[in-house]
Length: 526
Ligand code: FAD
Image (cartoon, rainbow, N blue to C red; front, side, top):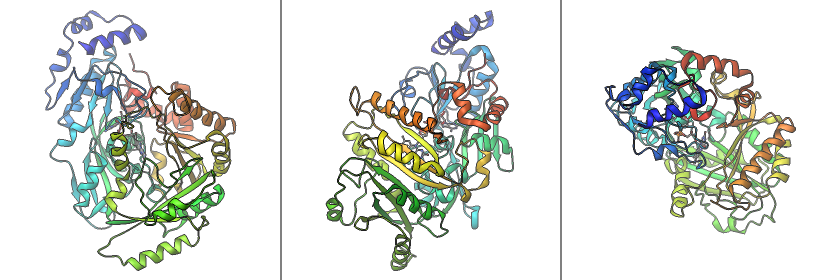
């Protein structure tokens, strides 16, 4: 009965009373979906889980959760909603691992599709070998990246571009972009996809790629789930290393730190991973909750005295294969790269870890935080792209006076070079500043529940707003990553010149605005 009581609520707000035919359906609401011939099933009871996400701030309860066992389950459901027409008012949200921050994978009174139940289909994990760029894996949109990695490693292969945390789904990160320390070279994850299978907002199952249904392909990549549900993705692979030299060095001068980052991302032969973070007014200099970095020389690390200064930590990694590569050659390459940098010389910290452990590093920290009950707290994150030309100005104001300490959570900062990416990134829905060099800056705060102090939600949200207000006043020209806005005007501002195309794509692929309502970009058409 929830399905249709939710509709009635919507109708009260947006539309006239339903016609007699609709009222008749209301008396037996489940009948509308019970007629579908599904491999999986709907659940109308245990829906609370689908009303939560990692952000822990937005809770919209769906009327039903679909646990699909096949792509046709998803297609039949969306098609049915589409064909019920405007008056049903129903929306459909794909839910990956629910690691959104502001309810983006929720559907208030609508249907949530639990994408993880699709991973059990037998055709998943299809690997193709072949030389050159021909290697790929076909995975379900609901697959976790950690499982993709474990599967491909069995064949000595791995995807090229990652997120820092791997317990996210393929469909979820491809709907956003997917960035980490490999993106300076390979581009975001959406730059490393060869083909997608998508269920559109009309319930059609469409295979798309650069060459086939290209407009849909590029719409969906970075498309915030607005144009279709990704049911399968073909991900490019490369030979996998098995070990990683993981290095951290410190700077007290931002311009030296950023000059070195930009130098490293410009080289053809560089590190394989380049990131960084800011340390303001705190102890525990080398570590943070996101990683488990254990330098080989912990005594030296503990002896470093920061005198309360703001420090910038450059974090780089060199991959190698211990069966094929000569350790001395790797060391020489690392030495060659480090010798051109300008960090504080006493602050070179090196760790040696297996490749899988390196990529899965945030999960280790997750387990620790979970034990302490510190994982399921509100996460008022603010993730940004800053044009390279404005980065010094942004850093001096934001790290100099707005953010007075970094103990609420890590603040990541790393440079990316778009000119090294596949030019097709411009055709995707991802919005980034229009400069070759851009910085990703993420304030990854955790709030202490019900605290009214500096570690509380209100304080952190106000600080985030201060950063946005300052940037807007100073003409920084930033773009939000994992964007969150509450009005369509703000969304238009976010997309800028891309808005018209975005809107046109929406009217083509999801004309009733059924999909991904949690972003609140388009209103369901009644
Ligand atoms: P969900 O939150 O479930 O969904 C996200 C959006 O995509 C929703 O709008 C949903 O409707 C839609 N969606 C989900 N599945 C599909 C599908 N199959 N087809 C179409 N649309 C779909 N991001 C980075 O880029 N780099 C990082 O390093 C990074 N680190 C993170 C670390 C942590 C601890 C967390 C919590 C998040 C991190 N993220 C990072 C952000 C992450 O990419 C997003 O939160 C993403 O939305 C999470 O994916 P999910 O699978 O949980 O998707």
